[in-house]
Every structure is written in structure tokens, then in C-alpha cells.
Length: 311
View (tube, rainbow, N blue to C red):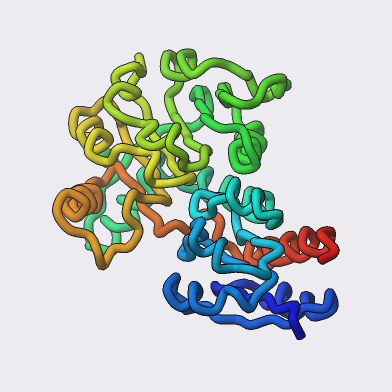
């Protein structure tokens, strides 16, 4: 069979089980490296991947039979999409597969952050009974600034609409989305009024270090930060400085500049050690979109999109 598809990560089995019905032979190699893939990619018409595989021009040139690339998840920064499309290779992803999961996780982190739940739990486990030191704040009455109104940004806004909050949203590339719960606005207005700022943008050259000292200094109020998008949009050094000065009151982070912890050294290692010691910071290991439901949804959505291609 010539129609071979390689799946290069641990995905829900739904996709691998369904693809043969479309005439594909499926190879599941979740631990394959970029170097190993380069040696065999010429055999495949389909490539399914998440974040660890880099689809460069060199890989695409080697992939003589490749007809589609399917990204499990949303971000496409590890794929040279433009070059792939110039070679008539279809590129699909599944941003709607985990949007609800990310929104729920972000909301959970926010409520935990405001109410000191993580710190209070840790205190109890250490035999410490502290009530006043763990007094929280209510979400009601807060002004939330959402930057990026794609699948996850809009999903978070929907979750927040059940609270008595004001939701300001800025998206450079979208307009006309205001409704009863959401106010379409400018970045300046978010920086002027927001008590909480949540990022929902992809990592591109434009968004790299989006949150830096200039961004922070442009914010008129002290604020809390949430980032469930990509770690590279936050300049970690500038961010930690703002935490230490009190300009940023606290943060909930699911993503980091360097997520390969075993490689941390120098400033990266020092920054992570600093964050770990901060009681006003909640950290999770890029699991916001990593639920049992999204695990299945992503595979189902990719199958549907591949099926439509009729390859």
C-alpha cells in the first residue's frame, strides 16, 4: 500500500483506527526524532504530529509523496505552512478540539489564584493553619482583559460571562465580535483598565515577548497575568521583575519559554527556581488543553478534516 500515514505522537487511538477506512496504512511511531523522521518521510503521504516535530523546508523537500500534514492541536509554529502549501501539501489542525479544556483550566487557575487555594492547601499539608494570610479576592467586579479572540479566547470569555465581570477583548486581526458579555476594544484600553490580563495568541515573530517591560509599564493598574497560550510570548525576566516589584500581583502559567526542564541552565534555570518559590504564582505543565475529552476530540476533528481532503 502506497498511502502510508505516520503518527508521530501519542494520540487517541480513534484516528489510527479510522484512517484505514480511507485507504491509509498507519504507522504509529510516537518516539520518533526529527532525524529519524527525515530518513523515512519520503515513504508517507500523511504526517500527523503535535509539537516536538519540526516541519522545515528541508523535511518537506525530502517528503516527495506527502499530501497532508495534520497538527494535533492549534499552534502551527513548528510547521513551515507557507512552504508546505506551495508544494500543494494540505495543512490542517484542530484548534477547536481543546478550546473548552483550555478555557476551563484558565478559569480554574484564576479562581485558585484569587483565593490562594494552592498556597492554603500547601500550608495545611505542612501543618500550618493560616486564615488571614490566605484571605482571597472575589472575581465578581473585576475587569478581565483577553488578548486574542480565537477558539480559546472566545471560550474563556464564554465561561467568564457567568460571573459579574467586565470582559474587554483585543484581537488585532478580528473585528465585529462585541456582544452582551464581551466588549471589543483596543490594547490601550485593556492596559488602562484590566485587573486580569489573559493571553490567547499564537507564538509568531510578531507576538514573541509580547509581554515585556514596555507592555507592563504601559499598564495603568497593578494586574494579574494568565498565560495558557505559548510561553515565548512572555519575557520571563521582565515578568519576574514586575512580580517582584508588585506591578504584577500574581500569575497563572501553563506554558513556559523552555518546557524541556532537563535542559534548563543559566537564566532559564534561575528564572524557574524564582517562580517556584513565589506563593502568588500558579504553575502547571502545559496541561490546559490536556483533558480526556480533548484527547478524543482532537483525533476526531483531525479524522474529519483528513476525510474531507479525499486523498
